[in-house]
Image 1 (cartoon, helix red, strand yellow):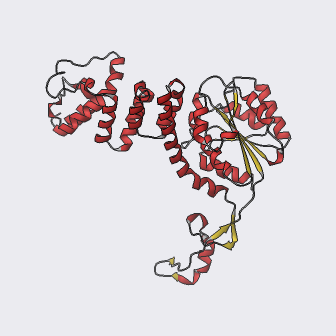
Image 2 (cartoon, rainbow, N blue to C red):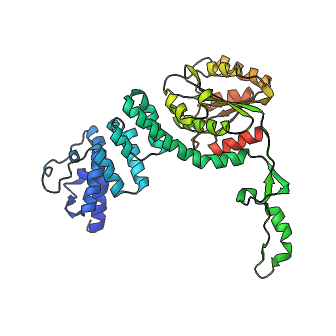
Image 3 (spheres, rainbow, N blue to C red):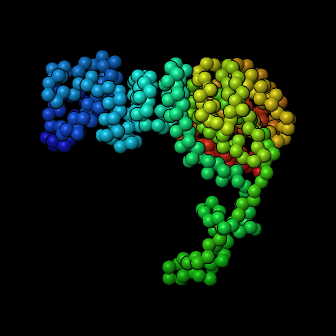
Amino acid sequence: MSDPDAIRRWRLVLGRYAERSLPGDGLSEAERRADRALDYLYAREMERRGLRRDRRRQGGPGSLDPSQLTPLGWLAELRDLFPRSVCETVQGHAIDNLGMQDLLSDPAVLDALEPNKDLLKSLIAFKGSANPAVREKIREVTRKVVEDIVRKLRPRVEAALAGRPNRFRRSHVKSMQTFDWRATIRDNLRNWDAERKAIIADRLRFHGRSRRKLPWTIILCVDQSGSMLSSTIYAAVMASILTALPSVEVRLVVFDTAIVDLSSEAHDPVEVLMSVQLGGGTDIASAMEYCEGLVTQPTRTVFVLVSDFEEGGSVPRMLAAARRMASARVTLLGLGALSEDAAPVYDRRMAERLAGCGMKVAVLTPDHFAQWIGEVIA
């Protein structure tokens, strides 16, 4: 290659392992800093694969030796050199893929980490082995991330559960959710512009929403095995939002091979997430039997199973519990995922068997789950 810009870019992509063929002498000061910051993390993976870096140039002027950085200094470099989205990606690689658990064991380092959902998942998985000082920092980070999720999700959930549109009542609240396009077209037909072939609307119509009272019990039964961590986070947030609705009682139960009733903490997603214990097996049957005992008004109860449906306990008992609740006219919903991206990772065969017992099964994002709930309790 003769293009200096292409050489520099390939040098940054390949890192110190390309030093012999693509020396870093042509890098600018900012590029050297970026090279060092990335090498600090990704060289660990390359060495784990058996590759060895050329040590001849280390220790001299302009050395890119990663030992010059500490975790805290490295995080500061990332924030200074890269956009926020890149920092979050590299930070996630460090924690999840490359084993830099020292990032999670120092309160000062935790303060420097960029709060986001991926970090939250790592912290929840790590909290059980954290010392008290670090655990308190984990709680602080958890609250920041959860508050951000609630802030974004609450308006969509409340809109979905606010009631069906009432087209006979006009609304002073003007938004796309209350925009009545049919009435707007009808009221502006006289403004047809033949030249533009368009209606020039000078009056916009908006409809109100019929508020409904919801004398319902919603039981969220959440699989807390490691594979369902994203779903557990969003289930905790959804429980807190649903708890704030009038005339709705929320029961929150998390399980693996043990069952923990967190209904009293359902209003506080941070407390819920600090209470969950990830890992272990999966005993859906026992969890469903426990939740069956919480049902007092079957026709006014929605049972939501959030799981990958990979039953490690008794399948016949699980299916029998589903049949009993369905026969009692409990509304049964199964969510194979409850995360923003709704990745469909679940046992489809088992989900089909549950569907055969009267459970409706879907893979939904949280806002679509709220719409589903709204349709059920309309």
